[in-house]
Structures are given as structure tokens and as C-alpha cells.
Image 1 (cartoon, helix red, strand yellow):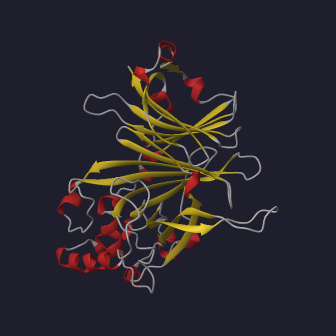
Image 2 (cartoon, one colour):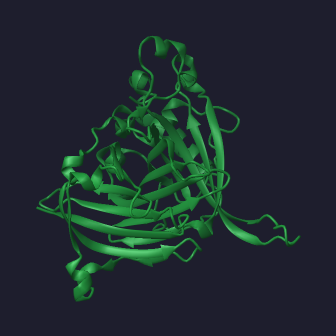
Image 3 (tube, rainbow, N blue to C red):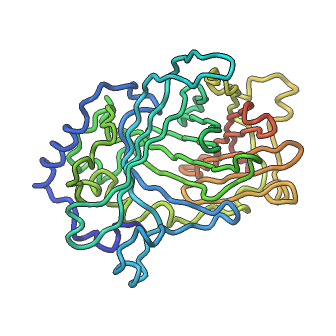
Length: 375
């Protein structure tokens, strides 16, 4: 259940309100764009964030101290929270080492997340928010082109250890977006960038999985970053959040969807695209069509995965909503696979895009590949 679901009808966007929101969106899009319309990083996004246990994959509800008492009493604790995200690139100084007093300049991704708190009644006109700012050296990111899915991933060690994977797709506008009055312009009026962002938290010393696992489903609302200023000074209301996130998304949050089963993953999988990189900032590349590889590699392109591949003494798979599954393998090497499952449709086979981090190599070795299921 979304944090806004119990009072959705109270702030459905009406046509006469679109002009006000359009002016608000323009006001918060004054900076220069840091990316082209095809880039995965940068700009403004809106969506929902949900947390899951690293032990059994179960949903972790929103903490009750974030929720109005009346909602708690009626058993309406939300399953996720609405978020508004701004991403910028900027330069900064890296810390000096023990052997030198000099500093060096590096490029950072700055992500500002405005998390909207659940509210009822008059509070809907002036929502409480929590603002959080994260910075990650851009050199930690690996980027891959896997046909129509673009992938960005990083293994971050400071100040906390985690793996982030972003799966981005240019997707058709839904009916609500087609009918809405929206100033978002990416040069293509028929499509919009949508991202599934997964954060796998790790124990700082051992790299063991740590709760929560966070999944964020979001779509781009502006090519130019608003620097997270949308709630500065107050006045952010539920109507604005609803139009940015989407009425359908709020009424049916992705985290309430049924996750895929391990049984659906069992069977034969064929490698389609592969790519590799390192954590030195050079891990950028296109997927390679495995059908063009040599005979030896071609013989290895079909894999049979039984139940013991997904869950055994040496491996554990968490199947999560939003088409995400995470496989933690202990042998022969300790690895984490973050996968986005693309369900079969229009007669096409089921596919999955996989990002595999080798933790024995301290996350330095990363592989990204795509597979399709062979019935």
C-alpha cells in the first residue's frame, strides 16, 4: 500500500490545477542539463522506494514513527514511500593521503532524495519531507548497453558499503501520461526514461548482505536537475506529488506486486549479450552478441539452471517485486548477482539482465550480461 493510498481521491489532479503544477515544474528546472536525453544519470526523477529483508526477501513496512497515528490505528501503514530525486555532476577534492598533503579533483554524482512523509487531512497541503544527499565518485560507475536496457552499477565502500545497480529503459508513455499536461521533454514525445534502482547494503568488514535491500522504481520528470529544492521553504502538496509520481503508481505500488518464483527461473537459459569492466572508472562498454563468439564460447552459451542453482548450501536467491531477484553465491567465489527479469510478452521469451559483482575481488570485477529462457 502506498503512503497516499488511503486518501487518494482527496487530491486527484483536476485539469484546472495543471497550470499551477506546470509553473512549479518550470521553477524547479533552472539549472543546466548534465546529460543528454539518452543518459541514465542526471536530471529529476519521481517514484517510490521500498525496503526488503536480506534474509527472506519480505517487505519491510514504513517505520511507524513516519506514519500519522490515525493511519497506524486503522492498519494503513504504507508499504513504500514516494520520493523525488535530483541528480547532478560536480567536481570536488578527494581526501589527501598519509603520504601527501595535496588533494586531487574528481567528478562526483550528487543525488538529492526528497522523501515524502505520509500525511492525512490538512497535512496534505504542506507535506513533511526528509532530504538526503549522497555523493559517489563517478569513476566507480560501470555503464553497459544491453540492447534496450541500459545498466549502471557501482560498488561503493565509503562511508557505507553497498552495491548499486540501475536498470534503465526508454518505455512508451502510459495512458495517464498521454492525457496529462506535462512539461517533460526528452526529444521524444512517445517515450520516457524509467529506472529500476537497486541498492544492496553490505556489512562494512565482511561484505555480507545487510538489511534493508532497497528497490526504487522511478521515471524521469525533467532533463535538468532541480537540485532537490522542490520542498524548500515548505508548500509541497499531495497534488504535486501525485502528478509527478503518477496516480496509477500511487494506487498500485510496485512493491505490492507478486514477485516471480524460483520455479519460473528453473530451466534452460541462453546467453544473448555479455560485457565486462573494472572498478577503475573504465568499465564502460557495449554488450557483445554471444552468437558471434568462437566455437568454444558458443558451446557454453546454453545453461541449465535447476533448483539447486538458485538455492543451496552455497547460494541463496531472493525474489523481489518489480522483477528483481538477487543471488548471493558463496562458492567457488563469493559473488552477488542483481538481476532484472523481463517477462515474456507478444510471443517473445523471458529475458533477464544480470549484473555480477565478484566480492572476493573486493568488487573490482564486474560482469554484465543478458540471457533469454529457452523453453
